[in-house]
Image (tube, rainbow, N blue to C red; front, side, top):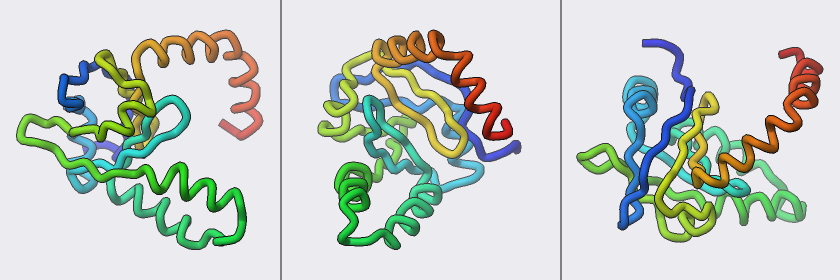
Amino acid sequence: MGKPYFRGQSIHRLDAKGRLRIPTKFREVLQNHYTDALVITRMGECLLAYPPEEWEKIENKAREFSQVQPEHRAFMRYFISSAEECEFDNQGRILIPPFLREEANLTQDVLLAGVLTNFEIWNKSTWDAHIKLDKDSYQKIMEFMAGTGL
């Protein structure tokens, strides 16, 4: 069955109601290794989609955060409070809540990028702009990653 990782990219179209079809290869990871649902939250200019079991690990760590530490409170307000559990309809689509669609500027063309234990949901144009920037600094990124032992 392979490792429970989300890999690769897939371009899809958001329908008028804000529903997004999740690619078969990502659904198979969910169905074979996790609960067949997603928890979606915001991160910068994209959304992050987690299997519920991976999201629970984040919540368990976040529960240990200090209530008085400003960075912890900011993380909880920004990242945790925007999380929404999304279930699949019988056509393999999820409904992305309007405030999350707006946050990531999701209109029609959407790119999903697998990043191991979760995947990112991007406005395709925003993704293209980020990839161009990343290509411009690719050598520096690779040097940094080499320093991590990768």
